[in-house]
Amino acid sequence: FGAVMAFFLGADAITGAADPYTHTITPADTTIWLSVERNINDEIIERLVDAFLVEVVLDIRKRSSGPEALLTVVGGGLSAARQASPTAESYEANRPVLRSDATWTVDGGTPTHIESATVTMRWRFDEGILADAVTRHNAVKLAFTADLEIVHLFSVAADAIAYKETHYYSGAADGSGTVYAEGVYGHATAGFAFDASYATATRQVKLSIPAVNWDEAKLTEPDPGATEAVRLTRTGHLVKPASGAAITVVAKNATAAAYV
Image 1 (cartoon, rainbow, N blue to C red):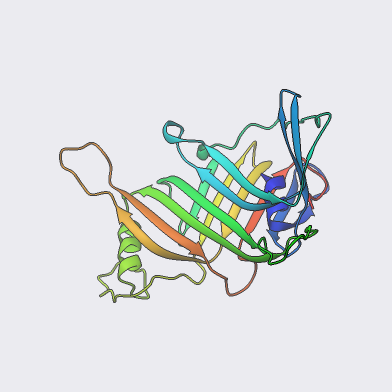
Image 2: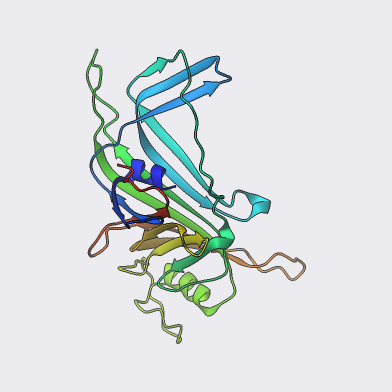
């Protein structure tokens, strides 16, 4: 998690004199170049010798419908090369991060009924060039975006407030019978965070987006004859906060050196 997010976002500040080391990862304009290899039984070995990460999706959901915590990566590259021998693989000894390890922050609260969450993060690169017979030697980051979708059981008053404010914005989230005015729901500081840790918090992955604009909230319709619970599905988008980074990732592990 730490390596992928550092390669993707671009900056890694490390603290700590012994295990666990804390990596604080934030966006940077610098493109991080990687070599990405595909190996099929040591017979077909293909390598993007100058690759970069364009999109990372963090997906957290229950076992019956998908992965516990999965990173999916989309990348680009400038050139490919066939290799005669493969690169040796290495693996961590740490166990995977589970949804049950997580605590959540949504709109400044700490809900316990989140069922799933998907965060899709993208860099827009200058991948299209208007020239003939040019071999590219660089790729420039132009803009960073992140989209969120969270699903949670519709079980507390805050869920009803979130639904009403998304569609009938009032400027207050007090649930006290406010007359909601039609508009667009936006947050200055409330935001979203996924924080998972285990082994007495010596292993941690955390993703924080301090400012989110929520633009849709859908309810599954109540059905007296069904056993399905009512759920609230919310979508939103990262916006620039008043101060600080638009997204911050923390990875706490045994890696002593910064990833980038």
